[in-house]
Length: 328
Image (cartoon, rainbow, N blue to C red; front, side, top):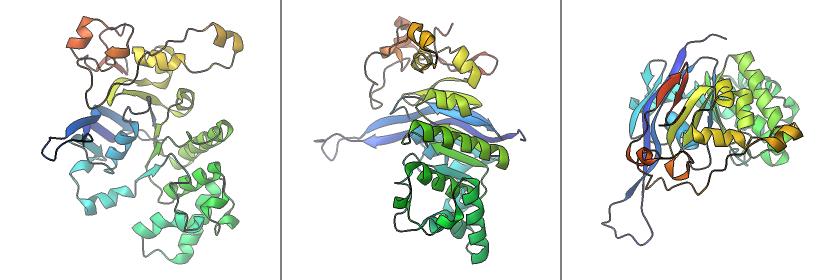
C-alpha cells in the first residue's frame, strides 16, 4: 500500500448550543463542548483507531470531518482542500471519496428498498448517467467482495441478520470505490463472533482496495487488532495518540492505562493476577468541564497543578503524544 498524507485535521472544535428545561426565551444557551482542539494526520493505507467511553466525542468528531455536523473552528484538509470551507456543490465532489459505516446496521438501511437498490443508491446519486446494466454488475461485484450471495439482491433488510446487514452497509460504502471509510462503531451492535468476521473483512478489503480507515470503537482489543495508530479521547479532548503497539505496551496517560487494564486477557492465570485500574466517578458534563486537566476529577495522580493548568498535548517519545503533567 502506498503511504502519503491524505487527511489532516487541525484544531477541530465542535460546540452545540443547549438549553435547560424552564429556561426563559431570552436566556443565553450554554455551550456543550463536544470536540475540543483535535488534530491528527492520516496517511494512505493507515487505520486510525479512536477510543473512549460514551459521550467523549468520537462520533461527533467523525461526523464533523464529513460535515454532517458543523464545526466551530479548525481545518479538515483532504488532499489539499479544506473541506470546512467548501459549499454543498463543492463538497459533493469529495463525498464520493469519503464514505461512512454506521453503528446500527439495520437502522442505517431503508426498509422500503431491497438491498440491490440500497447498495446502488450512492452510485445512482453521484453517477446518474451510469447504464443500468453497469449498475447491476457493480452491485453484484461488491456483494461478492463482502461475502453476500448476489442472488439475494431482491431481498429486504429485515430478512437479514445483524452481521449480514452490516455487510450490506459495507457494500454500500464500497460501491463508489472511496479512498477513506469512517467506521462509526460498526461492530458494537454485533455478537462477538460476528464482530471478528466484520473486522477481518474490513482488513481484507483494506488490503485489496488500498483503503484508509478511521475505526471508532469501545473495545480496545478490537481497535488494536485493526489499527495502525490509536487516539484516545476524553470529554472531547485528545489525551493520547501513538502507534497501536505503543499504546498497549507503554500507555502514558492514566485514562489510557485504566482502559487497557480493563481489556480481558485469554490466559486465566494472567487475567486473575493483573491489576485493574478503576476509574471512579461519572463523566463530567461537557457543558461545564473541569478546569485545567479534564480528567483530573477521576484521576488517581491528580495534584494541585492539574486544576490550574491544562496539560499541553505534546510528543513525549517518537510518534507518541500525550496530554498529562505526570505522564512519566
